[in-house]
Length: 296
Image (cartoon, rainbow, N blue to C red; front, top):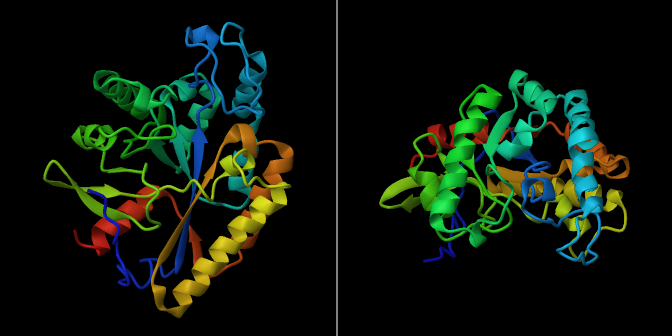
């Protein structure tokens, strides 16, 4: 049954443990190479740079090229920005994508950034059977820790989780939380088969998918203005007694890694890093804070 109450007027934390009022978590969705492709016998995928219908019998080399750009160029453009502004981020990684990009896998392994499981393949789990979804999760959770050199504690899937996604994630011994929910901004606990389970919500609003979903942004600066406006509102809200706030930002290398759209990421990072009561964090840091300071 849906919970339509949440925290209501209450505040779990007046501030984050580091003293900040607003925690900003950037999640970079690394999907390029895990999408459906002809080389893998899976046909064409969508979510490229255009929405023109392609005959399923014809290989869509254009969209494949857009994904390849994200792996070849876009991811490194974003990495340079994160390094320039010294920002910790969460990389939501499809394991097959990481297998196919050894230089990025090596960089991620050597970094201190957070890793969030995003499937082995980047495929809609609602189109899978339960056995298929479980097999994809277990395959990813075997491969990812080996590639990144550390445990993976969180999980989220492509666009829409199935009714069984949370249960399957909670069954895995290494996972502690999922991030498919978009029904809150702050973490919260729920129960799965009678056991407590942590949810760290994601955002489809503070997300570069809005370049392609109406109402779209006329320029990348509109994306930067939207993100900046959101964090400033959350900061104002916290200063007026709403308690610690959290903002999740979703990025994709094939989109925000394009030079024009990277302007929005650069300007957002440049602005937020000047705000003394706002901190960039990764998801595992939030999970650890929540477990320690917000009793279940």
